Image (cartoon, rainbow, N blue to C red; front, side, top):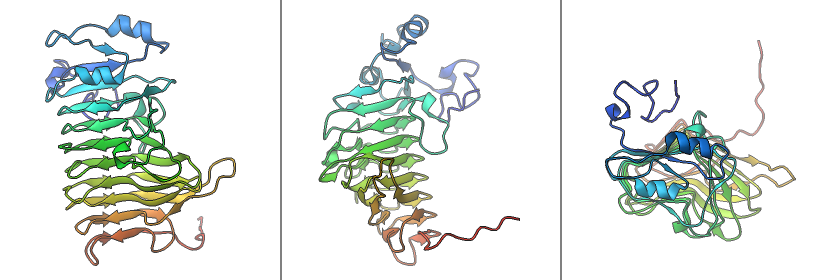
Amino acid sequence: MSTFPDGLFQYGGVPVGGLTSLGIGNVYWVIQSTNSAYQDFMEERQGIYHNDGSWRVHTTIASALTATVTERNDYVVVMPDDTDYTITATLAMDKRNVHLVCPAGLGYDVGCPKSARIYCSTTNTPAITLTGQCCEIAGFHFKNTASTLDTGAVIYASATAYYANIHNNNFSMVLSGGTNSPMIWGYNDALSYSLIHRNRFNTMTGASATIAAIVKTDAPCTGTHIEHNDFIIGCTCTCTTCVNNQSVMGTIKWNTVTCCGEQAGGMGAGTITNAFTAGTTNGVIGNMGAVPTATLISGGTASQSFCFNWDGITTTPEVVVD
């Protein structure tokens, strides 16, 4: 029985009647030609869908995404590989109800293993440009090239990219001088009614660099929910805010933050100015930060936005064991 949580096998395997009985469209598989399982995989699974003449198995994520059709509820399933899926141009998710998933990367409560790492090697270029509605991105380890434009966010959402489901990914943040790009940014009203949850964000390289916001939404956005994510800031980097959610009626819930992440080799802990920055109509509930008092939250509306949020304490608590 698969533990895949988002529709493909959530009923305990392929049901009687096949995937089409769940409303699943075409399933496109991605496996790199250098993968040791490539030949066997091609012999077993390659073929043509008769509904549109598209190939089932692809060697690049870009090719598989191109084969998808809007509103057909297609899945692009990426196979694990110990070699990066290296891209030099952004991956376009511009069709409605398309799912980009790595099932081998699912199973962690928060984040994911490095089963399939997408590495964007071009500066100021998103790994994924999201413009389609109701899309899913799950199970990937992302590595970026240090960038300084908001439009160079690892996942850059624009236009009508509403109702996105971005979850269980790991972002190893590569930073450098200047103010670095967000990892996820919803431009203007993009990411309205979206859920960004159970991702892990941690600094990887870039001593003493600054990132203004790791996850960012703009004021015209509506109903964006950012919850159950982990943020770990080290490498002597400065994070102005981990989450800047300016969406109307959005929430920042049950996230955790630490700036005590000291990297091996002697690089020191990070600095967080304000862990969470909330719009005036945000609900900010149940967040925890290993950060000093008064640096956990800014913004919001007094006596209305905040409930059960915890910042750091000054001493180690006494632990009583029965």
